[in-house]
Length: 242
Length: 67
Image: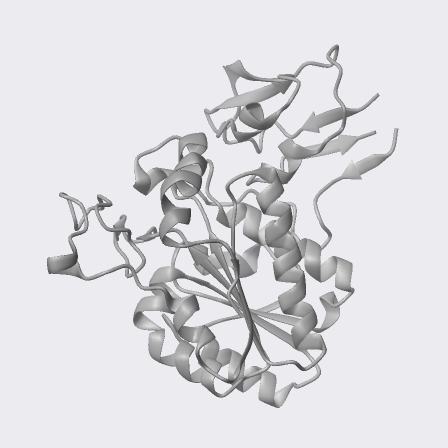
């Protein structure tokens, strides 16, 4: 018998600190698989965010740096400009990229920095206790919107990918989800495309992943995937945005 | 014939593999692992087709697939 699926070399054989059913584990593995398949492990530099994935660098077997909350793209810009031959990517959540880091995100995209961004959208702040994030859906209950998010008080869910697609410096934006194994494979293809774009010097590439947070959605892991399919994908439609 | 090997000490019992196995060969165990969680067990006598859906959806990379 031949082994046809195993842990990628770029992912350390360590237990992760994530909750059962969390999408971060899948995202970490997909990035590691893409880095292995493209053969770029020795020249990849990842930027870890602040949020649940703050210690992502412990799990990846390639060089990583940490950035202050929301500033991953500013740090990535500096690293990429000093080391243009390296492949630099940021891994950011919705609280990081779309709230405190909106400024850095928009300007890095507008400058057309040749970077890859993996944007994990789980519609809540996971690390700090499930508070409302900019991407929280209308009516969604969180620890700071106990009666559900209301547009009069809290505004609408922020569609940062659609906003960034308007900028001329942006080359590629795609929204994918972890709703089923088939969608996970599509997500991997999108992440690989985003890395290839950087290797080919095509400019700013972002992949938004709709990822489950069973703990703060108050659902089981399988119910969370069904919620992504039935509710979240209606607000955040999948597909290539640019 | 295919089979999977589950790293049961690493398994967090999210049961996503159980919901996606098309042959229903993965089951929640009554036993606990060293984390104190109900891990999953694979039925070695079943007809695994090696579709890898369990391994692809596993958030903790606990599953190896052989074919």
